[in-house]
Image (cartoon, rainbow, N blue to C red; front, side, top):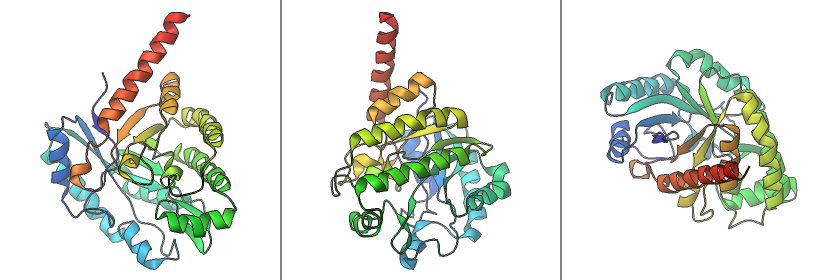
Length: 285
């Protein structure tokens, strides 16, 4: 039976989310019948990591706030013990220019860290590192113009995802790649991306996930984005992960309490359909 678990969520420490306290998120999870819940807040980034300083201030908490985040998450976990299993985690960024930056945070806070979502949010572009999920306009002017085409941006994105998976194999806790197809967040507002490229690259990632012992964040936030309208994990990829025993963890990527649980029905239905297909194929042998 599928554990009802929201494995990718944010908190009042998120600079681009809600100021609602952690209890309100957990109350929503309990109300919806979730059994496990992971706090996975954005940790600090290196100073000046992107050139847009006002945007930089919105991306992650300051380093001096990290101990307070862990303390508040531990307290919330204790308050809800017996009602829901809460896990204290982070959404770590893979930063190829300084791959040890996040690992130093893990070393420092490792005893408190139970769960990690590791993600690729940034690519080199015009003016330095750029957010791939900020706006369609900045994606067009600072990434597509830098690489020359949407497909070339995607190739570089998947290169970063592959490197992130290898990097994350060193993490000592439960871990999964975050929103593996975040590159498609603006697909309805940008030049079309070659789906054969996507399928080729994602198929190549499957054995890397197996080797790293990493799972997949089945992230449904794309359904809430008017430029996306779909999950950040294709249904065929979910099926392939199931065949290989790669862990699949639903993630609402909630940035406010009422987003907790959004898209769970789709996840549950998709997972059940994939399991039925696997069973049918076994019966035919």
